[in-house]
Image (tube, rainbow, N blue to C red; front, side):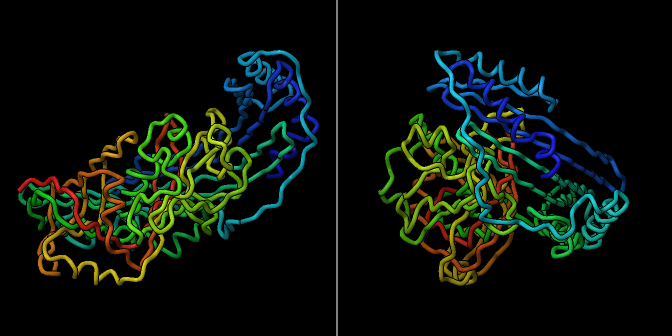
Length: 466
């Protein structure tokens, strides 16, 4: 962070904040960012894309009551920053002015160490990593028809300084490798997907080698060639570790974000202290998870990262807030103010959201199914935060009868309601696992960790094709 601190010293930032406050604002903030990115796409043994990028800039936010002004610039000189501050201030023009408070730097509560920064790995080594993943995917079966490997890393530095005197910096490094394999047999085409990623450097690809990522994607694609059309109707479903977290994130988590709550646009409004789900369930959002995909030391408003219990033993405890929604709800800021870049305003977003572990072994959850579905992968879907209703496709699923896996199934959808599935979870296992996702909201995409142990939902509607 020395680079941004050197370019934006305290004196300069205080002057910019003073300009932002000159129009009568209650609050002003400078968010500066420097981001280096690399991406690689390998498709059918050919490098289709190899790109590097660097983006530097700052956004100035000005608040007066419920009004917000925002302007940004990709130049960090005094003139450009002051001009942006004046543009933002003009949007909330009022009487009087105030001066920014003296700057203080709060202690850092958590670190996410990076042992092997991506910048130390050259492009030739990146291509080799991708080739290793593709080879492993193809080696599993001659029925693999296509393999796509995508690698991406980001090294981001931020500096957040506001008129209340807060001054924080953070460095976020993320590395990820994704493999998608396509298998074909007699006109049937099936896809497998696997990824490895973390808020870390290339040590994540030493702990989870490209070969394991590629082999898992190929194995899933080939397995699904033996699938049969999925049954329809209401039945129990076991969500495999990690994947129950996807359902929780989409169908429930967004509805607990403070902006939706403040607009009465979610089924979770007014339910703090009330039972919303099974007493077996506890849900957490935690940006302090060591090297978690959605982890950081401070959020994009300078609030320290924290662990927020969203519901405990089925009882809703806290919403996820940024600065604005915390004021609106008269609740503490939970460190969930996030933004895609300096060109965006922060909004409440999840970080690493997961269901905590229970006591049951996962094989016992599968054995409990007389007739049901084991879901090991969730794909695209739709959810209505106002009602909690959702539809999600299953990318890898199996019919289970009398506790035994019978065969894989395809064309299966999960159809339900977020509140209802929280109530209908009747087994929580002891095998929490995390997945990586890129979560979209308000036109912004941010990294979000998603986790859960294996779960059994006692009843849910399966939209099948059989």
